[in-house]
Length: 341
Image 1 (cartoon, rainbow, N blue to C red):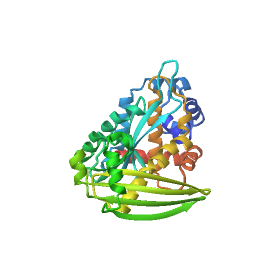
Image 2 (cartoon, one colour):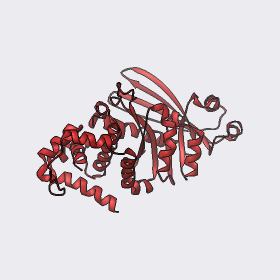
Image 3 (cartoon, rainbow, N blue to C red):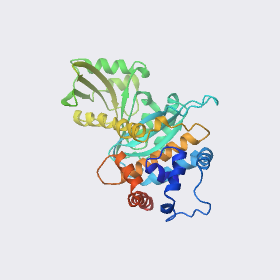
Image 4 (tube, rainbow, N blue to C red):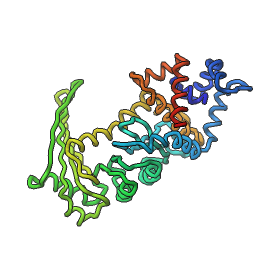
């Protein structure tokens, strides 16, 4: 609890947790019994190194269960590496966390740790098992565009929009050739937006004429294919990027464009916040289970802060929690209330 309060107040390390406890001891006495005083930073470190990460993740999943069960809209799946969590002496590679992000709720619905990005494919099915996918659209990058993952999403009552690249043999080239053919029947929409010196034109196209693809490739649940072509001009420099997708449901090009853009919210709403606001990439916990357990703690704190309904940035909320005991109590009480419901 002290560690959670410290992270909610902007703390990053076990030393910060001990310092928070010392400076906020009178506040902590309101709901904790501390017969031996505030633990030292070494004690915080030992606890997180030895804590069973499976059990800690189970607690997180239980807390988020109500939100995961009621989730609607887009669920984005993506991984993030904690770059300074490697341990050269022990030969341990950096920790890689795979997260499920509710784009409409802007909450972490679940996460699993793997040894590296190459192992992400095996983690995603276990992560999906933790979620209720009925009524959702699951999005993932090309790494996780796998037959088994597509079949699992359909089997759990959801739909998918999966980015497609060359890791699926000739399927990618077949779809690209089909969508680029002027004779292909497409529904198309284009839009333009800009700001901060950037102008972007996006062309979204969808075709449900995929019977021939199914005959050749038999992809689980495939109902349509889509393509996004983005032309971006920044400082007079023009770049063009084309991305191809497999869809298990026929979407209008407008909705298809919305779903693809929603997927990138996991980068802006989760990964960017963890790195820039919570400084996760600079975290130097490397021993035993410490990196994984503290990563889960940060995501729990992130969810509690995002559940608080007032306007303002996450950075501002963390500062308010550190400066205002009443606001910190509000964040904790809100989490307890959500858990009870």
